[in-house]
Length: 106
Image (cartoon, rainbow, N blue to C red; front, top):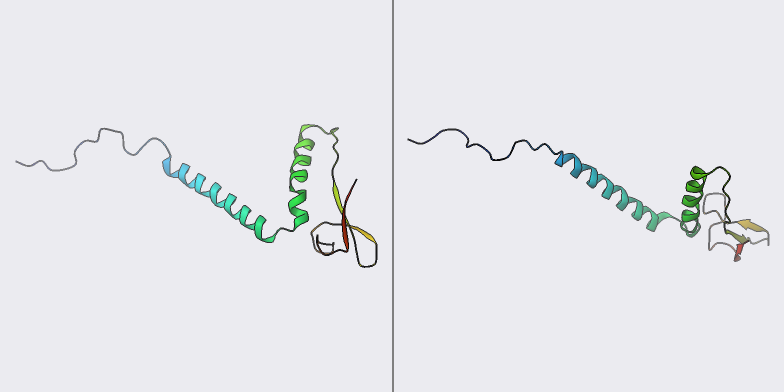
């Protein structure tokens, strides 16, 4: 006579590990990183790309100590009127490559 029903599993089911939650978390992290790289490559100006590491370092130093200090290089450009301007890469400022001359400020 044939047996009806399921055979017993050798392992506990469902698994005690949250495999789907781990997979969803890592997929979200990969998606975030991919979209960040895509935005960085396609829409950031050269000044924003240049300042990224200094920006991250200043935040880390600020968390470590309120008295820490560091030197930063600022990009300075000259507009059509010959006036120096800080290159910020944002609206209202001068974007890198749109000014007459570019030099690194001390």
